[in-house]
Amino acid sequence: MMIRANRNITASFSVLIMVSDIERGIVIAELKLLSRRSVDIFKFENGLIRREREYYDNTLWLESKDRI
View 1: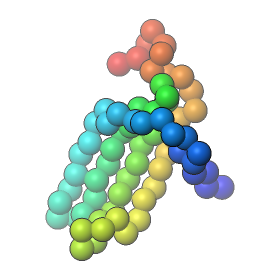
View 2 (view 1 turned 90 degrees about the vertical axis):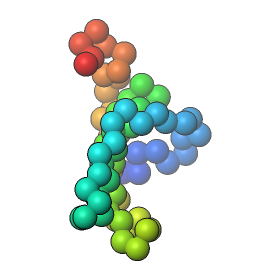
View 3 (view 1 turned 120 degrees about the horizontal axis):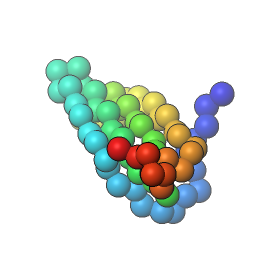
């Protein structure tokens, strides 16, 4: 089951980490949105996003004492 993690959310997000592999056209981004984490994987072709996978963590990990 796929869930659109950011549907109907008007808040902005912060990029925590971003890495890319230019030769393969892949970008991986870890985002902070409303104290939650989302990891997005983008596949680019000809400068456009061809495919996106989004993994959403529904816990409030960014507000815990154990955060990195």
